[in-house]
Length: 543
Image 1 (cartoon, one colour):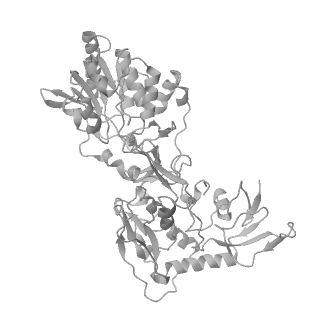
Image 2: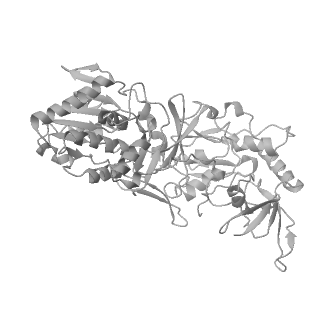
């Protein structure tokens, strides 16, 4: 493994890497703006320039000092090389670059959404001057609406061109470009072509300053008040890795979490902005019983008793095979396992069904127009855990039917878990089950079968519990509870854990131990998800 020195610290690396990449992978800071591991290298910001000594091609035992500063983001690391980022020459460059960048930058940090996570702030403190020497008027540039979700504050832009390269190389839509020259140079969109591609929110993530801002997050919360929890998106079958950023029980924004095998540094706008259902006004908050067309609140003890008694009495009256267990592909695999286990404990011949997920056309594959390489895939299947549900059906076996076969069964009662994002989507189709006299509905919202259900049980969103989803490629991924459950709601797994009378308090890890003991070995020893890190600390995939 080759090695080199950066400011006297010996570092090693594998493969072909640039100096900046080697430094970051070894935990050393080299300031940079334009560089991003998922984009092409342009070496335009110049703050990463450093002095280097490199082995003499004629005599590798000797080092030759390169006469000028070199961009560490674009200079390959070489065995035996020495890099000096703290030398007088390197420091002078860093200070000069920061002074140039701040000449026309407005002093609006107190009202900027990027404050607290801004590289310009951080580097100004570490590498900038204490006082400005610029006495002339600053160049003033306009604020622009460049997309459904994005605002561009042009006077804050430092022309790193990360956003331009993203729309050219990742989304392949090329809405953004550089217009003008000198101090009149600006990022802008082409006329009539706003940044509304399905990956548009990523340009906000990669902007190192407060130039590109998210309209949905604008002026809603200070970033230093936010907590960040690793999770998996419930919006489609791709299993996009995300960070839920929240405080005081409310989600404020969703950010990408790096996963080199699934979504790399990016997420879709669907995953980013689709969490509104968690805070929907029509959330079901307490268990309810419907009597004479009226809904009456129950305690959880009463709800548990009525749920279990109703199912037992149905089987006693109508015999085995009279129960239907409809699971939701939006529930964690642990939830589905325990739901089926409980219903089958009452009726071993209960019918199982998972309604088919909504599919919007075909998968959308984004490619780099120059190389043709796939950069991101947006899945058409809009359910996060259909594969997990199918796996649980295969495990339990027995009576399994499709949505269209319900009416042909002798069913008297049903336990139905519903879609929390589009509650009517599944519920409306299940209304075909006209022969089912008693419906017990588990769901988040007042919709669909809520008006027909004899018992409505309030459940949590994915953000209010922990568990695992299995994506369309069969990858099992854990997610962690981010916010407390709303009022008196409970997770589906906890509900059926309690109904089964299992010992101790419910945990997703405890449910997976039970699953592993039942022969589902792939659910044993699943590690908790790892939180994200800053872009400059991420792993480096091949560009």
